[in-house]
Length: 335
Image 1 (cartoon, rainbow, N blue to C red):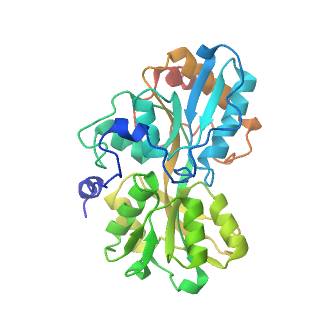
Image 2 (image 1 turned 135 degrees about the vertical axis):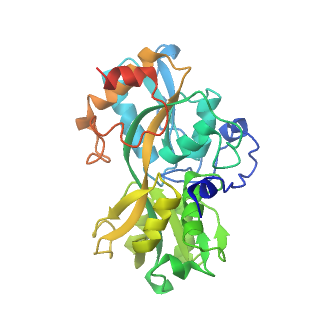
């Protein structure tokens, strides 16, 4: 399948007929790559102060990486600027683009492939013919690893073993579902029973025997997989060899990645896979000084973070940037 064919495989997003509809979602995903369990906000909204200095930051689900990392950004920004961040748990990438498009979010974490789809008006039906021209980038952060997880007892050791299986591809409309569909298409797998839920629910489904495997997109270690591995014998299915090369050929935003042995209990060997990139996005309606200040607060104080610290840096902050950079971010990184 060609790259263009893969990009044009539109997904039906439940209840979403436009970008605006997505912005109103409070999805049930908890993709760290992408997602939400309950749409909850962070414990604090940043306190009092001038409302003009309060910024809305849309993250992802509590079972992934976006939400805890966003709350670390909140702490750093509030300690090193006059701004406060209201961090909200959401359905992540696709929903977050909708929130940026209608201005209900000032900043959000999204995947770089979803950013490209949205900016160019393609890739999934929510964006088809509806480019989000106001969407702009701030910085890329870390690889969003595609993890295909199953229980050891399920006897699934390759993508080919998913034929006839029940597979959770992520919440409807999420970046996880987009990536899972792309990978399955490239691998020639079409005869599977698709289930759609966020990471924590998918882990419960695996433990209960309701599904055979699940795709998870997020920076390792993903909390929901850690919890599953602590109570069950799991297997991380390798995406490697010719299959991986075909996936990368069909969709250029995928890159090689490896989940180190020992990341999850009982998985002692390195596992090859692919990844996209997590990134901070904003929109053109946010003032340049605001974006520059928030960007500086984060990247001048990376030592105060504890999540994904091996990956997030000033030097790599434009690697994989798939959309136009906001002028405020450009002012910081070009300084």
